[in-house]
Image 1 (cartoon, one colour):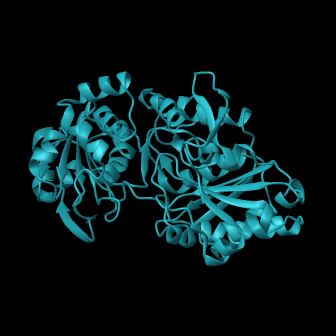
Image 2 (spheres, one colour):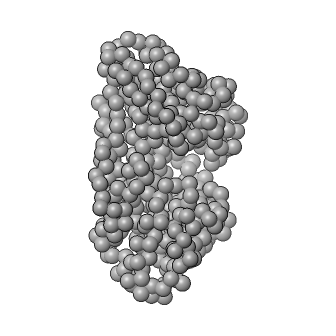
Image 3 (cartoon, helix red, strand yellow):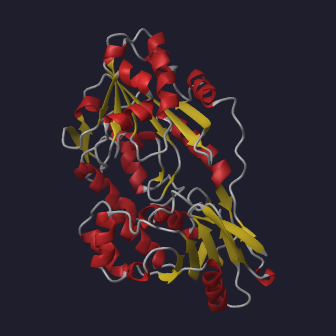
Length: 415
């Protein structure tokens, strides 16, 4: 059978013999919405397990709207104006509203970036600021010892409204919900303590109940309550396909459920060989980004199998810390042991990669230097068909094959 998958900005063909009965795993088609704005307003008019936002807030209260920074595809320029309209209906004045961009552990943003995220009208209408992980209020500790250190502006607010997009997250299960607070507006120490739970076997994409990372995130509510959320799920063009508003847990779960209906693909059993593309640029710009696709499809490949990853990675590792961990440790076991001993953001991605490498070999079709790929414990290739043939020859003439063209957003899993 003939296939084509995206590699950087082009499609690359390859062939898999019919004797392998290859199966292509693709997301389902997203239902259309009237418009992105109309979908958000529909959600605001029909909140889940909550009164309408205009019935919750009151004039004179200090209100914060927490939304994502420039590293996330959240269309705040669509959602924030709709939320401000709701606040206006309640008599809230613009001077009492602050939009906080949750940076987590990311860099500060430029004024132009903030304007672009919310739109110039909103930026000129209400106060818009970055969170500061060094200016926090300590509010207590979660059961597992994670400190609850919240950016002071958010901690001191009378009302907290969280915005976010919901997509698969390789150890929190999904983005969105209370994740806007932890890690969004938390201290570095709190983020590191929370992220240490990523090494648990219950911390993986698409998994919520009993996931210690997500449990930690949602326990933060007990110390820093949230009044209302608006979460959106996006289609492959990063347009809003679904919005859910209301309760911080149940509205989030509705958005997760919608995401699953499009992107979670049921498989009968793992395959011997899985051939995956990130979906191309920009998801394959570097290995730091491409790692998400590796993690998404890890459940589709059997123990001892082979994953063939097509990812250009023209920018190399893509993170100084991630690259340092790759260079510092020689084996997956060493990286996993190191993250147990001294957790470091950026290094955690190398440990996540190592956990997959304990399960299967990775053949990487890439523009990266061979030595960089080999140091990351993967086998380098520069021709997709050559990598596919090598994997099939090694696994045998009867080996089973999955092809995942959009690994960045597809989640293949057994029931």
